[in-house]
Image: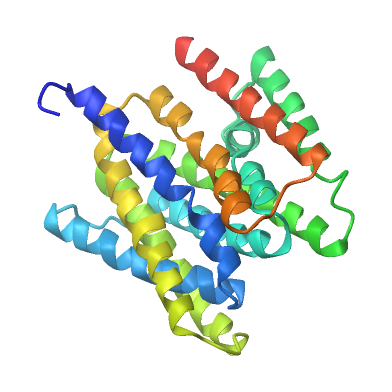
Length: 283
C-alpha cells in the first residue's frame, strides 16, 4: 500500500465507496417499514457520522445558497430513491437515478442559461430514449410510479450537483450540503414514516443501521477523502460500479430480476453517460 501514489489510493477508496453505495437496494427491499421511515432513519445515522467527521476535521458548517440547494436536492433524491425501490425493481431505481448527468445539462441550460453543445444534446436525446424503455415492460401502476420517482431522484440529484458546482471547490460547502441533506431527510421522513410503519423487528433495525453506517455514512466520508486526489472523470466512471452492482446484489440475495426492456434501457443510459463523461473531460 505504501508503494501506491495518492491518486491510486484515492481511486481505490472510490471503488470501495461505489461498492458500499451499491448495497442499498438489498436492505431497502428487506425492511418492511414505510419508505419514508427507512429514508429518514438511515439519513439520521448517516448525518451523525458526517457531522462527527466534520468536527474531527474542523470543517465549518456553511449555510449558503449553494449548500442549501445541494441539501434540498440530495434529500429529495434520497427519499424518492427509497420509495422507488419499494415500488419498482432495484435496477430500475438506481439506473434511473444515475441518469442525473443528463438532467445536469438540462438544468444548466434552463436556469444557468448554458448553451448546450451538439454532443450534449445528443447525450440528452439518447439517454431519454433509454429512460423511455423502462416504461415498456413495467405496466402496473405501482411500477410506473416507481419508475417516475426514479427519474425524479435523478432530477433532484442533478440539482445537488449543479448547486455544488455553484459552490466551487470549497470543501465546507460540499460537506455542509451533504450533511444538510441527511438532516432534512431525517426531519421529513421519520415523523411521517413512523405514523405509517406498523411493525419494527430487531433484524430490520440492524438492516437500517447497516444502511446508515455502511451504505451512506462511511461512503460519503470516503468520497470526501477520495475526491481530493481522484480526478473527476475517474470518480464518475468508478461511480458506475454502483448501478452495475446494485441489481446484481439484489438478484443474488433477493431473486429480483429487471425486465428485458429495462436491461436494454439501463445499458443505453450507462453507456451514454460514461461516453459523455469521457468526452466532456477530454474537451
